[in-house]
Image (cartoon, rainbow, N blue to C red; front, side, top):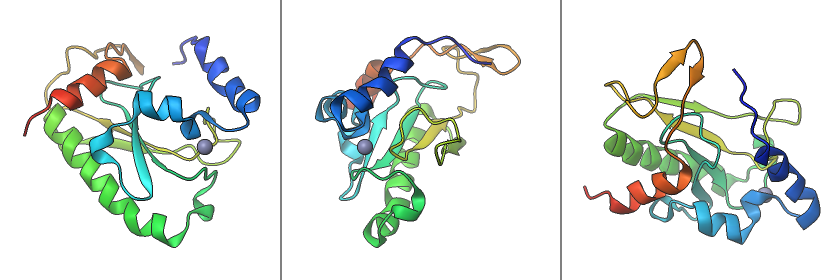
Amino acid sequence: MRILEPKRSTYKRVYRDKGYCDFCDPVVIKDQEVVVLRGQEWRVLACKYPYMDGNLMILPKRHVTHTDKLNAAEWAEFPKVLLATQKLLGELFKTDSFNLAMNLGPLSGGSVPHIHWMIVPRPKIANLSCFNVMHDFYLVQMDYKQLLKKFRAFKK
Ligand SMILES: [Zn+2]
C-alpha cells in the first residue's frame, strides 16, 4: 500500500537544485547519521521515511549509484558495517530477524539515486508502536529523530 507523502517529492527535487544528493548533503548526514556505526567507507543513516520502526540505511560515503561502481575497499568493509548494524539493531529491538533490501537502478523505484541498503528489524514480539491494521499496511510511529535518540540512549 502506498501512502501520500508530499515531502518525498521535495526530497527528490533537492538533488537537482543542490547539484548533489541528500545522502551527500552534510546537513542531512549530521541530522540522520548513526555515528557509532560509521565505517571508513560506509555510513548508516536513520531513515526519514521508515517502512517500519527502526529502519536504517547503510550507504557508501562516496556518491555511488550502482553496486557495480563500488570499489574494492567498499566491498571489503561492507560485511563489517552490515553485521555491526544488524547486531546493534538486534539488541535495541530485541530480535534476530530483519528485512534487508535495496532498490538498484533508475527503474527500481528508489527515491534517492545514491545506493543504500534498507535494514528493518522485525521484533520477536508484537511491536505495539507498529501494528498491521490491514494486509500490507503498517502504521509507523517512530520517526528518525526518535530512532536516533533511542540509539544515543542505548547502553549495552
Ligand atoms: Zn550522493
